[in-house]
Image 1: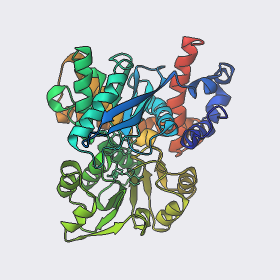
Image 2 (image 1 turned 90 degrees about the vertical axis):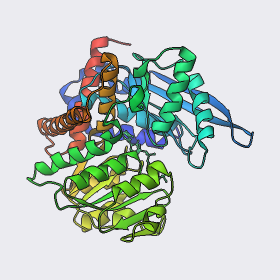
Image 3 (image 1 turned 60 degrees about the vertical axis):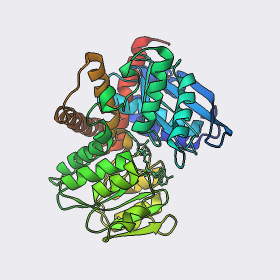
Length: 435
Ligand code: NDP
């Protein structure tokens, strides 16, 4: 870690994995002999590049682009692109590192990578977003490919951005390589259920956790942070399973709606009109808005908490408040939303806690299914894709549980996810020799 100063999020992600895989290292000393830990924390390749573009006023803007190709032990690099002002090398490396083990858990042949830029689409016109995406892809295209590296969306990168990125890739290369990006539009190679997959998958995973206690979402009170791609579909699925989601948020504040979030209105506000969450409260009589900084979302009483916004959004004080209010399950839809102190508090209090690399793996898993459909030139039905997603989430859950048990930490999903994800990657690295 001394080799990577000033990368706190990356350090945090590495520590969490390394602390919990000790039982696997004791059982198989070859991992240490072959320096797997040193090798798996050093990306295969780190690409950083200039992204110049012209804004609507004619001013030249310069952003920084990233693509971290972390590990191709199990397949082509796979992981999203994040466009947000605070994006830096530490954040992209933590996300890329997590992605290695998440992708391993899906059981599909995908390596780990992540990318993005410190460009923020908020407040930018469609034309500005298009020009930025075209400039970004003008460099990125030479590094990616069907069997090399397959990016997707993440924070700030949805269907619109993937469209502009794919358009430019196709134009530069003169190839319709559908499988080079996932999260595509349904008319040009996208998969049904990909938009819903991360949110749905998080709820499928949490439901399976509840099942170990003969319980379910039915009748539960749920709080979901965020109101983006992951959050919206987690809310939709939780309510479909009989729960009431009483709160959600964005970076400007939170809304409480005791009648249950109206998903169609939330989609209209956030997906179609791209407005702030306060608009939801303006248009819904049962909802109230609280601006950011005036009371956090985790103070609200919930049986189930699904953090679906961003990293380190739920700290120890938040965890204590949730525990005092009787939370039973915390499943991460976002990547690393709980600080280490927070998730340790959940585990000590006997709360069922799922780390994102297990519970939010449904998004990348369905990207893997999108790649399968592209390769076969097929389009599956929503029901088929959703059923595959559900089966994958159940399998990840059961693998985490069985692995935790096998290594002497029953019920510890962090140990289970990290050991199950890590050992497959490490074993492949041993098979390949020193490369
Ligand atoms: P979106 O951009 O669609 O939505 C992000 C949501 O989180 C928005 O509501 C945003 O608010 C909110 N948010 C972002 N940063 C902050 C912050 N600092 N404080 C408060 N709220 C914030 O992204 P996604 O839904 O795709 O991603 C959410 C999380 O899920 C990320 O951690 C991502 O890495 C993870 N993830 C996503 C997957 C996917 O398939 N999309 C797959 C697996 C994980 P605002 O509108 O104000 O920006």
